[in-house]
Amino acid sequence: MLTLVEINLAMTSNNQSVDILVIGAGPSGCVAASIANQRGYSVKVVERSAFPRFVIGESLLPKCMADLEEAGFLEVLKAQNYQEKHGAKFIKGDKECLFDFGEQYTDGWKWTWQVPRDHFDNVLATEVQKMGVDVSFEHSVKAISFEGSTSTTTITDKDGEDYTVTAKYVIDSSGYGRVLPRLLDLEKKLDSPARKAIFTQLTDTARPEGSAGKQITFVIHKVDVWMWVIPFSNGKTSVGFVGNSDYIESFKGTKDERILQMIADVPQMADRFRDQSLQMDSHQIEAYAVAAKQLYGPGYVITGNSSEFIDPIFSSGVTFATQSGLLAAKLACDEMDGKQVDWEGTYAAHLRQGVDTFRTYVTSWYDGSLQDIFFYTSDEDLNPTNKKMKRQICSVLAGYVWDKTNPFVKKHEKAIKSLAKVVQMAS
Image (tube, rainbow, N blue to C red; front, side, top):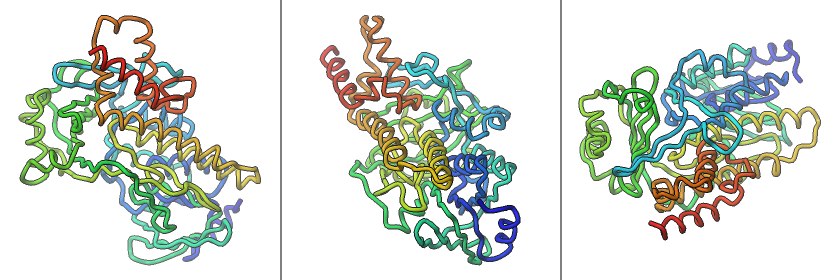
């Protein structure tokens, strides 16, 4: 490890040296930086944006709570009084399906938060700085080269000046920026239908009373078009639509005008938001699916959305970010400690298994089979077997996609297909 004297000397020149360079100050990068800092390694974080900055992905899953706790963020996050999330409600027509995280199969956290991401991410980055980690905002990675496992990264600061950082390890947590996949030619497009997302934040003075007004809600407007409603403790609510391009583009006008028209087109939510005002400019993005050809190599590892982006229907983004950041930092530190690390088995295979599980649920959602399961109702719903299966599915929705004692994880594709077939035959 570098001594404090060496670090200070290195930081005074245009050629800096650290043990670990983290690219990106989002949840994945902050968790990784905190873990490496705890292990005694010198860490520098470079972030291309100024914080606070807007980013989508406001609904967390219980699984990420353990990651945030291990990284030392739990207490400062509790102090923010974010809206607690104890489950999720799905609506289709006049039917409702509620998943209560307190009634899941896997032993783990039973709640999490709904957070304005600009505020949430800024809290994490600020706390990392308080831990003594150097975080440089508005600094963009321009190039990177490797000599063995030692990297030299060229970075441009907010004044347009270039400098280099030599590091023993690089953790790419750049999210949608996908720095290393671009620079190292690791981009891999996935074969998935083209979807778009449009979203904003509004006042929400007509929230339902009690827990119903605080709960994240998904409204299935059409089989392949859904709406999210995520209330925050600050009184604002995130509202967005994801669906096929034809539907999204069928509304005319500015993005603000179009999303208000879309909300008015959803009977279950039209009255609630009829007289509410926009609290931010509406955004539209391509809801794409993209991955990296490989997640690690000599002297680097790729985490979070830099490794693979999945459709947002089940709010998996931050959970994969924190889990991959945590594991990547631990293994990088282990390797620098001189330990033998199985990156393929311990890291890549672990992430692939979680991603594959969620991908099955996303695919089943859009082909309608998972929706059939969610909204199936009959007297048989009262029997213990169906209650057990709902708990098992609930655990997946809570982010516990690595619990292989759960048949809806271990044999996720077969389990969903078999249950959907039974439900469809009974309906």
